[in-house]
Length: 209
Image (cartoon, rainbow, N blue to C red; front, top):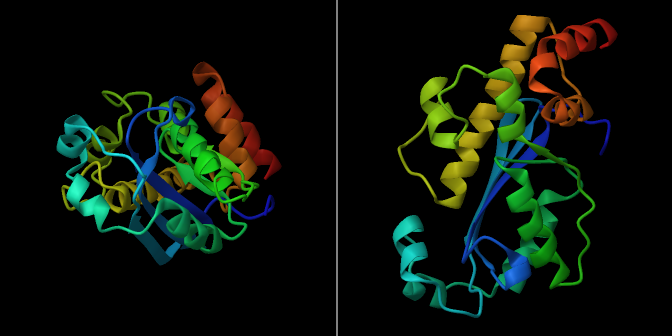
């Protein structure tokens, strides 16, 4: 798992009842894209019933309604399927600190540990695209002219856009710095690099790659 290149990952996104599983919030939708050697090879999208009603704000924000969730499979069933889908792939999310918390929480409910490694496309984009107006997913999609159908705040649509962003960042690193087949660990380190030292870090990485 640790030695897979950064272009072989599962890119995922959760829609949730709120901001923190520590406060009782639950996942209501999971969307994910499997990328192998830079190509999309599979997708996963499911609504999941969280055993609680969602607020009017969440309904308006996501377009997911309580009626839709009442007809969905229980979260525990969906997460068991998702655990099979992600296997031991490395994981990517935009603002991974949010999605990783919900993944860990929902997997724990079915007695599954989360052993996969996470990288954050938001943190990497902050280093690579320092001239962007901001680093929200929608802004970066427009900034880099990435494919989109205009849908936001639905899990699979956001995972698709994050996938295109991730692959674009790998492409830009190759064209700017000559880093071909970037290692996943390099992307994790890049996301933690001081922004002012990004160029130096990537130039050194190109030499040692």
